[in-house]
Every structure is written in C-alpha cells, then in structure tokens.
Length: 137
Image 1 (cartoon, helix red, strand yellow):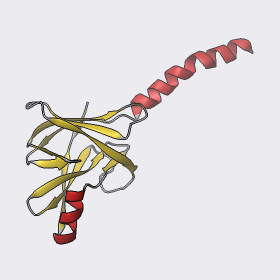
Image 2 (tube, one colour):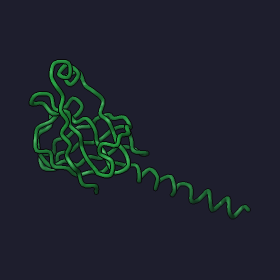
Image 3 (cartoon, one colour):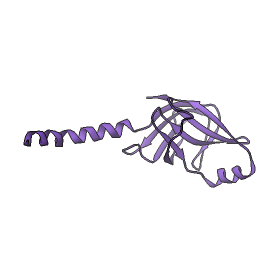
Image 4 (cartoon, helix red, strand yellow):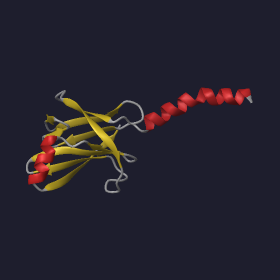
C-alpha cells in the first residue's frame, strides 16, 4: 500500500507537467499583411506564436522571427467549431486595419482582448474575418 502511494506521489509531477505541456500553444505562421496585436502594430512576416506560463497561460507571445519585433497579448479561452481540427490565426479586418482576434490549435482556442482602437473602428466600419492556417511546432 505504501509503495503504491509513493509511486503515485512520484508520478504526479510528471503527469501535471505533461498536461501543462499539452495545453501550450506553439505555432508558426506567415502573415502577409501588417496587423495589430493587443496595442502593438506589427509588420507582415513570419511569426512564432507561443503561450506563456503553465496550463496554456493567458498571455501569448507574438514574435516576428525575421525582424525581431513582437509583443505579448492577453487572451481568454474560447470554444468554437469554425476552425476546429486545424491550427489557425483569425484576424478581424476593419477597412485596411487588421487585428489579431483569435489563435486556434487543433484542441483549443484563445481570444484576444479588445483594445480601444478596435472597439472604435468596430462602431464605424464593417468587420470581415481573415483566417490564416498555421503550423504547429
């Protein structure tokens, strides 16, 4: 009995770290247009997208691998069937401005928090969605 409890106690950290790793977001994507992530304007290019912290974290690192430009954005967990089964980034477009809105992996989705600039544009312009397929690491 003591051996079983010891085995369980020793394996618990491994199981927890595996679960935390399974929930992290790690994607590569080419964005062909300039866009805004959080409050930061970013240029078109190749990006790495990673969650920060354990258990998938609320923060996402959006990093341009060529220009060394990037930002951290806060996000909330979300669920939807529109991009299920694939890795994708969803952008909302208002006129000529693109805003990173959602990041999807095969299993989970993260929705970016709205900023004031996006809220103002949403009142005055029609929104369209642009979905880019991303590759997982």
